Image (cartoon, one colour):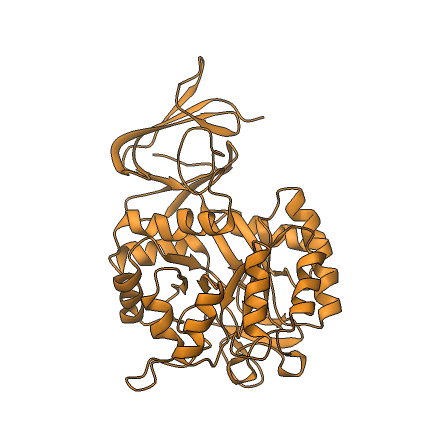
Length: 381
């Protein structure tokens, strides 16, 4: 059972800014504005306290796949990421037969209803064969709105996002369908032109799936999707900040155009996250992870990542020199708002779930709390 706690002395990042020598009060499973009688006090001087991380694009971890694993394996993957600060995670599926994906959606929707995951993201099969990345080309198909609707229905209200190559036949109609049903239409794995991307945004698309990756590069005569996605204030861009998927200048360009309000750090993690090098399966495709970089055995394409969000946070705050407040928005508040769960998670405000992460001065993870209970208890000198 969670007990009342006061986390005192840390730099606490709130929606209004950072409070030096701040306090976070935890009463049961939630944060509170008033300190209950008998609350335990933990001195976190010299540390940061930030909201629990929210990952809206994650395929697995701890050796487990959200696409093919059993319920226990999915829970193992979720727990692995929780130990790295991700207290809210969406389970992402890779390309497969539509009937297979509907069956997986049924399994995952139960976990979402139980509060173990925050919903389901379908990445494929409605993506471009020209930009397929680590997806099986033989299983790709045009985004038929009827099939998109079939996936949504199978998720029983737990579908959160569908990644589409919106330039394909049926793409724009599918975007409109998703918007009508309150599901995020994300532009990704796309070969769209600038003009086609603008059309998709006007139809209701609101997210760029791992911006820069699996889409044409930025050109001065043919600017492609990147320019359209960066310039439009309606779009939030996902970024994989692992040092492999993006050059620091590309990350800086995204923040320059989007500020802290329209960036979402994601992992795009696969089974090897938090587990180690070796051979894995990503859907039906074999992946080799070497030196923590995942690539397809056939073709050598990057196949997701082995990233955890604590590493993304540290890299952003140290190597990329992004203000901590903007890092917190990108890794917690912004994805929570997109997913429609900001009333419960994504910031340290009274009444929300007591989901938080303790970091030391070097931004190394020292503690993780979820719903008032320590998953990683700080060991303080």
